[in-house]
Amino acid sequence: MRGMYIAAVAALALGLSACGGGGGGGAGDTPGATASFEAGTTMERLKNAQKVKVGTKFDQPGFGLKGLDGKPAGFDVEIAKIIAGEMGISADKIEWVATPSAVREEVIEKGDVDYVVATYTINDKRKERVDFAGPYYVAGQQLMVRSDDNSVTGPEVFREGTKKVCSVQGSTPGNNIKQYLRDEAAQLVLFDVYSKCVDALKNNQVDAVTTDNVILLGYVADSNGAFKLTGSKFTEEPYGIGVRKGDGKFRTFINDVIEKACQDGRYAKAWTDTAGKFDPNVPTCPAVNRY
Picture: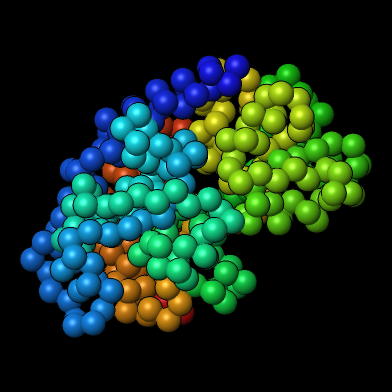
């Protein structure tokens, strides 16, 4: 079964890459090729270097999924390429760094990446360590279960104490679900990446996987009918771009880029070519928070 899953994921990634998720072109064009930036800013440094390191996820269909070419494809990837392009950096000059939920703040603080676009929910606790541009998308947490299981209808079911749910370490969904659990130690299974949760659900080790709805839709699409979503969204998760704490000029620049992309059609194209394969409704761009 694991081999079937890997094959399905690889096929999806190849399809997304064909839509512009892999190399240059598409949303990753370089409209900032002639732009100039204030001396000493992150934008100037990156443009002069003509390379950028971006943290994203490699295991989430539709947002960030590693393809057969070794590069990730998805909506987050396209947003990251749009930002790089506005600094005059083409997509083939981006170094993609696998960034699971638990290490997102760490890689920013250590300078291992220049920014993170990785289904990264903006919240006050994370703002203590990093800054955020955006949001560029608002998701909602939901549950994925096996298709033949009608016993899980929403998070309240876990208060009975008999069912297990899986999420990832350091994630907002993993923290959110705790309030619904009778016995956290017995009911909550945490891994470093969601693909391990998918395997646990497939093998009957857990009763549900929880993360944001569009991410789960990707796994449902890959499952050949094995999984389904259940219940309704029970949170709002504003996704932001993480940058080094105190880098206000870079954050302002990225906010400007998001607004520009929302107006000129690049945002809609990025969605349609990636996550739109699972949810064809192009989301309305949320208002950026220029805190």
